[in-house]
Image (cartoon, rainbow, N blue to C red; front, side, top):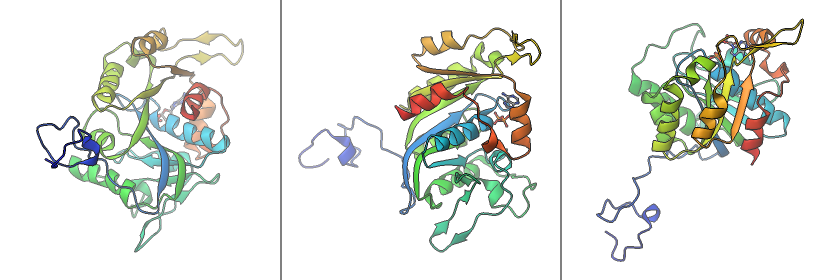
Length: 274
Ligand code: ADP
């Protein structure tokens, strides 16, 4: 214990009986990185559109004038480079690794940008996956970034835990589908964030409805939306609904996510700016 305990554990590393906060495991970023806000984008299971939302948020905030970045922490299922049409490999020198710039200047880092062949599978165990994400934070020279979106792998395994513990998250955005909302999965994501003392900034219900291009009627294909109730139950202020939109899927598949201008995620963007 320090000779005079100030009871301010953030200024002291001693594991004494007076310690009132767990020791921080936050990793230092690269000395040349200046990242103002780190936002985790999470989901309970795969395929609900988490990568789509991460990419669209980075594009939307870029259009609003911010410097943005996407750290693809979904190491075994990386889809960010493809959405941005990036197929080149990331460069590096003795100082560190450089993110690849998208056509509108969004910084991207993904394991796919480091592999010899982008179709090679990543067959690594949990600790190695988690270590890679930490390296993306510590060894990549991000330079100046206002908003970094971390596309997390689904669930609550090793990698999401590492992101929660090692990166200084300002908050998370939870992406769900309507079916998921009625289950416990969203609840689990909210509780994990609470456990890690990270605020939930917003909730996105993806594939919420389909709007008929002929008559304009909205059909809730996957069932009735419960997003507002769930958000209210957890005091989550920003809520967004994104429809099933074939143009979104086509643009992502073609590597043109930056060409999409939609306003579905505006409530989340506003919450980020606040
Ligand atoms: P996740 O990151 O959660 O695994 P993705 O973002 O990769 O999910 O999305 C899975 C697939 O669904 C992708 O092919 C994507 O283009 C498509 N997709 C996601 N959201 C929508 C949407 N709102 N409308 C149409 N297709 C979508």
